[in-house]
Image (cartoon, rainbow, N blue to C red; front, side):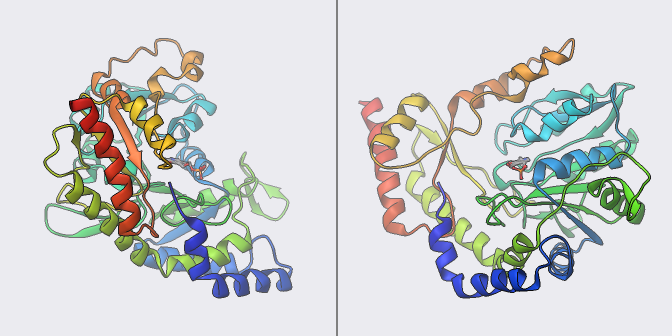
Length: 374
Ligand SMILES: Cc1ncc(COP(=O)(O)O)c(C=O)c1O
């Protein structure tokens, strides 16, 4: 699905030197390298604060803790997402209220939000799934009207420019009260290990998240709140600092690969290619087809047998995961989510895809779809 090895070889000299410099410094946790990366990432995003942490899952948990969300509260979130978005809520005893996604963008259906609000609702958690932006302008308006927080799950959307109706732009992850992202190796900005970060323009929230990520300490050995241990290590920060300079180039490569797929599958009634709303710059963390009348799991198997990786993101929507049995009254009727879950398939998408490889992938997908047709 990804080719991090070829990508690494193109920046090997710089990365190797940066990693060795960290080892020579013996400053493995925190320090200038991590501070520099946080500053560069904040500048790239036009965000006042970036707080690095150990992974994207922790980022979401720390965000919820910093906003004072607690057991018994509710958060509104799509069910069509990676489990991390909502697992952390459950961990804190916060009940996820699952809503539908928009069939075209795969992101939270903004028309479903208000119907899900109860007196217990504290936050909305939109997910920029597959790299397409959730429709943040109406989401922020609803949040303001009902006095709710917005935590953006930007693990898959880093680098996306969301365009407001007045023409102004903001990076996804910087529109809500807090944005969270992941540097998991396959992400658009991927480390060579785990990593994550929180974004905010709010000074007090930034301080609180910094504190929570560091055992709740305000200064060494003085622990003011219950926190956790969530640190980005210096080697990952050094690597990410190099890769951040290439992020726009990497996104452009993904978009080019998406253009190729789009053109190759255009007009085929067996599949819908990913929609790109005009108010965002889809960063194609995934290239995901929606199939019509094609056995998705059989295609997945056929591709594997022919040397083409493909993935189902995600075979079971969050609202059907057993883990949420811990909550009472968790039955949600989400037919669009269920429908998509049975029909989506993601094809290889990364910065190193060559046309020859894509031609082979497309050929195999079409071979299967045509066989079904005949
Ligand atoms: C949408 C989404 N949210 C959260 C996460 C969690 O990130 P991490 O794996 O770094 O904990 C991921 C990635 O795995 C993700 O895709």
